[in-house]
Image (cartoon, rainbow, N blue to C red; front, side, top):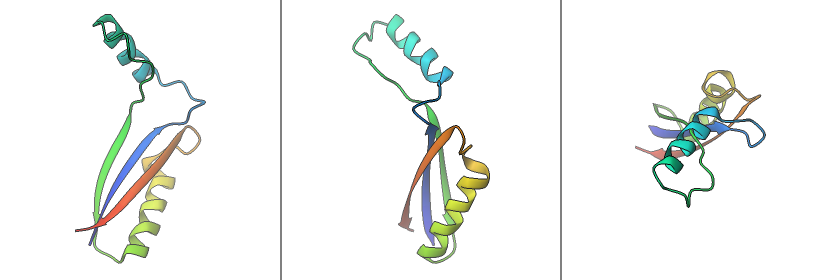
Length: 81
């Protein structure tokens, strides 16, 4: 079995309104040293298969549902569990 940790964020060219709102709020709380903030999604999946099949399955899941590939980028890590 393998655990996949999937991280999804907006591409650099896409405005992230949630991140901008959080950044503004943090500046209002006097965290003026904050220059950039990114918000995203995190998924943890456990797959009962080989490492190669798990990687292929996670890739398909990201392409089809977990990430909007037009606006978001993703990366994942696989570890045995």
